[in-house]
Image 1 (cartoon, rainbow, N blue to C red):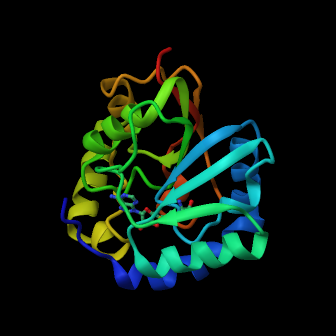
Image 2 (image 1 turned 30 degrees about the horizontal axis):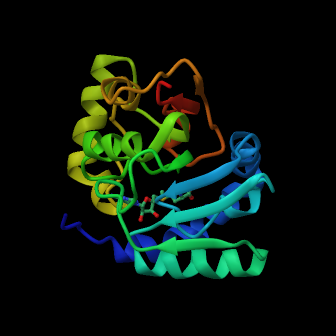
Amino acid sequence: MARRSHRLFARWYPKAAASLEDRGLGEQRARLLAGLSGRVLEVGSGHGANFTHYPGAVTELVAVEPEEAMRELGRERAEELGLKAVVLDGQAEQLAFENDSFDAVVCTLVLCSVEDQARALAEVHRVLKPGGRLVLLEHVGSANRNIRAFEYLFDVVLWSHVFGGCHTSRDTGAALTAAGFDTAGLAPERLPFLPYPLKVSPHLAGEARKPA
Ligand SMILES: C[S@@+](CC[C@H](N)C(=O)[O-])C[C@H]1O[C@@H](n2cnc3c(N)ncnc32)[C@H](O)[C@@H]1O
């Protein structure tokens, strides 16, 4: 599947995001990833901000990242950390892995940016083992219909173009349910340390399960 590249975003995002790690994002990541074990796939791994937080019980880490500049930074990060991670070119909508082959999949701040969210979630569901979990941290659209309509317009006119295809208006919770995930393990979160408008966006954090 052809994908629009966001090279400029890939250059500035790692530096801009670094300042958020100490202001709460790093803690969020650590909490989310702490319980992982076995064979794990991270989708849209960016510059590898999650890599520091994978526990030793993760026996194999495979990461997929479509932007070359981000991928290179991710590989460097893994090397610095002495992490045996494979960072591959790829995209969520077309995962080059076998069915039922991962214990867990990780997506942080990615499902807002994939071009085809339904297709990406179908792929994540396919590669997860039955009972496997999708661990995620994602900002989602407002529950208020009027605000959501504004977010949609904002995305179309400005936000998505500047922020690497990101959308503020997505109903990711509903998309997860439609894709067959059990979302009981997801909770709403507020991340006030993020820049506007994401600081006022609701977030979903936790795990969505593929039924056993
Ligand atoms: C906001 S950044 C988040 C990066 C990283 N996950 C983090 O937590 O810092 C969004 C990431 O999603 C990636 N991305 C965008 N579209 C994607 C797709 N279709 N499949 C996989 N990754 C994608 C981008 O290249 C970028 O690395």
